[in-house]
Image 1 (tube, rainbow, N blue to C red):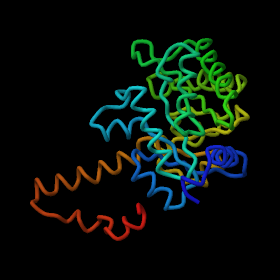
Image 2 (cartoon, one colour):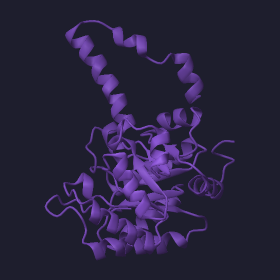
Image 3 (cartoon, rainbow, N blue to C red):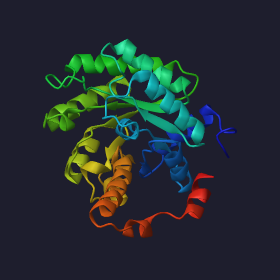
Length: 275
């Protein structure tokens, strides 16, 4: 099956089914067409964008990519793979609930079958939307994606923990309100222990996305046991690739050697994975 013969509705159905079956699944985050194709060939069942990884590939910092460029990026990833693609759409690129919800619709028009918006304001002086405003944004998003001609899996994110607000109680309160408002998936990036994962998953009834960066030493099985339904990598894969590049560059600069090349993926394997 390829991207030409797989309809968006079929991808949407497959993506929703992943959240309904037993256990949890890993949804890695490619940052370009090549990484998306490679992850598909490696056997993953769905992919998600990374706003950070894509920004890094453009020589920008996370949050510096505009809405139009991000929608174009989503369109490119969806065309590159037959897998369902969900997107990190930051705060919906708007404060107004209906405007943020429209960003999800634009993503769906670009080929996405899922996407998230967060309650981060992009203002470090007051980083998190007030509770009622945050819930209104989720409600507007739920109403907007329900009008699409296929099942769009909407993820609502509570961002306290990665923006200096170490308040797990408020984070859970928000996730519970987002669930009541109709979100399909809930996500609180910044959970640091399996006990915190367990506290969140036991407090809500909808599938919970866990970013492995918070619990990097936990296994898929351990996160599943703690109640996680899907495990994303965020910008970690892009940062791992950048890490390999930095190590290679430093070796050449400081040692005048090329030992890094021994760990490079052979061209023949890349041809198989990408071709």
